[in-house]
Image (tube, rainbow, N blue to C red; front, side, top):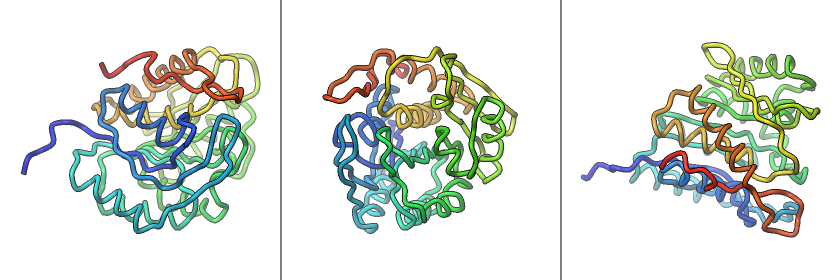
Amino acid sequence: MQTPSVISALTIAGSDSGGGAGIQADLKAFAAHGVHGLSALAALTAQHTRGVTAVHVPPLEFLQAQIDACFDDFDIRVVKLGMLANAAVIEAVADALERHRPPHLVVDPVMVATSGARLLEEDALHALRTRLLPLATVITPNLPEAELLLGRRIADLDAMAGAATALRALGAAAVLLKGGHLPGSGDVVDILVDAQGEQRTAHPRLQGEAHGTGCTLASAVAANLARGLPLREACRQATDYVHAALRAGSRPGRGDVLVLDHFAVLPGR
């Protein structure tokens, strides 16, 4: 049987019908990094730049069939997880990952949409903590997601560093905690905590509300890992990529949120 010559990354997440986040953003980020993108739809959203109007979760058997089909045919170097709507979906995905054992797993614990809509059911938090975090190479929560996972408020950079360490204690090998939601007008600081300690990256804060930044960051980290970069460099380059894509973003819909331009820079070319 022929061995695949192209490296692939698999995203297991939700579809965004508006094209700004979710599976659609993941595949754009993979393509911009020169990585072949695969997808398994764990949820479908009726969504645009003004909000989420409906969510549909397909049968678990179909989700598992998508994942198995991808692993059966492609050289998957990394799996990126996004929106997993409930505990049953998380359990099914965890079972599949334990079967296939990808070299890397990037977990974006999607819980709240830009509009404020809740995308993760309450009973799924326990499954996320116990089944997925221990499998993760890195998790990439924003501050509201980290607060939900830890059950405490994160008010400043010192609290961010402590929260990243506490999240890593839940089982993930590393935590990239995103600082975009921290109040203030200064630089946006993201904190990576891994076995080596702490790494901080800072970028000037850009004006405007954005859509798909979390999905894109996690996918850029995943693509960089698939290309063989060490974790710290994969995360550093991913934050640079998202900043450039956001700076070049546009408003394709009638809402006020910016959608990233994934091809403003082409890091994989």
